[in-house]
Every structure is written in structure tokens, then in C-alpha cells.
Image (cartoon, one colour):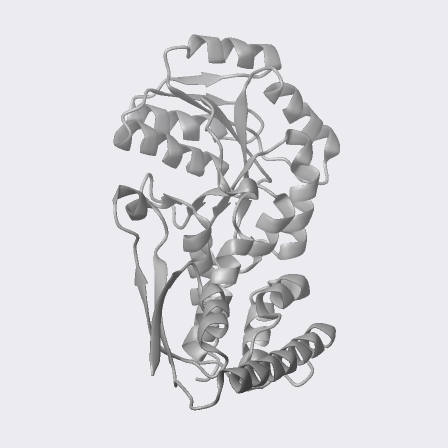
Length: 353
């Protein structure tokens, strides 16, 4: 009996390494999540420790080489068949996963990327771990980094997504938890009560608030907040289809800089509207996403499609109205877990249930 242990990022990597080292007849004995030693490992997502075993057969070395080659060619042919006809011959497990992923509004392209080349004869738990790992990789920001955050951070997005409440959560987070000097600016003088809503938050947290009605006033407001470490700018909600209003907002933002622009989207919005908002809001040069109201949706899978279309990372997600509790930093692995829980929940704890 040959036994070997692997420390890998995901089951796909383990699967390939096991086949390479122990052959296609090897079996997975155990899997568990572990962290790499040291401080760096604490801040990284956990890795998988996979133990596999294979029988040491009596065949000659030459015979085993020939047999392995034949099996490898058979596997290649099978994989090519799946690539050319993804649903052909798909067994109940893969078919169930395909259905659940599509029900999460993942779309055909993403669903196919998550399932391509997988063998439905694999253990259900292992298969699920591979799909989850692929999903996390799919949602990684370009280049694998979020980049440095700027001092000025503007929140933009459609009406009704919760920008002002999200801004208050961020302001409280930086002021109360990170002990940073925070300043607030609002451009939302269109919506009735918007200024007063933010003013109430500012008074509770003892934060300075500026109101700007023109790009020049915005620039002056930022100057008056020179002592602040972080400045959050609240903008008026703009319909994605209203190009003129988006250009007007861009005129405000171009008066200050450098800055981060967070596109705030609601997790309850259907995928077609989210994807259209991403495209139309590119005029504002957003470089991060925030998803709100995740507690109000049973279909968070659309986040993955939007992240891929936007090409920028998700910075924060919110779930609830409480300030400042109901907000947390987002990372691809945590988001993937959130989506995968919804997939398995909708499938009554898995496809085989």
C-alpha cells in the first residue's frame, strides 16, 4: 500500500496530483482544512490536507506504464466528450448540481466553467469542494489584489440600494473600530430627507458633515475636511439608463481625487438589471463593488456573474439595517461559501437529498 499526503489549494489540484503520483486507481482516505504555519497563514484562506492511498500491484514496471497510458488515453477521450457535449451522459449528481447552480442565477457560462471536466462518480463531498474552490478562483480580483485604498471614497449606485445607510456603516466602522478621523460629504440634495438622514448619523457619531451642490462646493468641502484620515462621499441615486445624470455625477467626482469609487448594488436585484448597471456605471470609473441586502435574497449566486462582468473586487457586503454591525469585508472565499450554502440549501442539503 502506497500512502501519500498533499497540501493543496483545492480538490482539483489534489485530484490531479494524486492521479499523477499514485495513478487513477488511488482512493482518497481523508480530507481536512488546515492553515499554513506562521502569521501569514493566519490571514490566508485555509488549505486542504488530502491523504490518498493506492495498492502496490504485482505487475511489472513496463506493464504498469502501458496500463497507465491506456487509462490516461481513455480519460482524455472521456473529458473531450464532456467538453464537446457538456450535458451528454451526465449522471444524476452532476445534473443536480447543474440545476442548482442555474437556479442560483449563475448563468450557463459560469455553470459550465464550474462543472467542466468533473466526474460524477467522485465522492459527493469531494465534488462539492472542487466546485466551491473553482468558484472562489473565479471570483478572485484581477491580479489577485485589491490595491491601496484612497483617502476619499465615493459611493455611487442606483436608487434604493441603501447607499446612505452603507456609508454610515463604513463611517462608524472606521471611526469606532479603526479609530480614524472620518469626514462625510453628501451630494444627495435631490431626495427628500437624504441630507437629514446622514446628518443624524453624523451627529450620533460626532463626525463632520459637509453638503455640496456643485463640483466647486465639493472641492471646497473636501478642503475643509483636510484633517480627516478618510472622507466618505454620498451621491444621489441615479438610474443606470439616465446617461445625463451619470455624466453629472462624474462631473462632481472629477473635481476631487484621487479617490475610490464604490458601485453599490442590491443583492435582491435581478441579474439582467445588475449587469446593465455595471455597464452603464462604467462612466464613473468604479473600482470596487458593495453588495447590500444579502439578508433579503435567497439567490446570491448572481454576485459571481456580476463580479466577473465588472472585473473589480467586492469590497464589502451588508445584511441588515443595523449601524455599524451589519457590514463586513468581502473576500472571494467567504463570498463563495455564502453562495455555496445557498446552492446546497436550495437542494435540501445537497443534490442527493
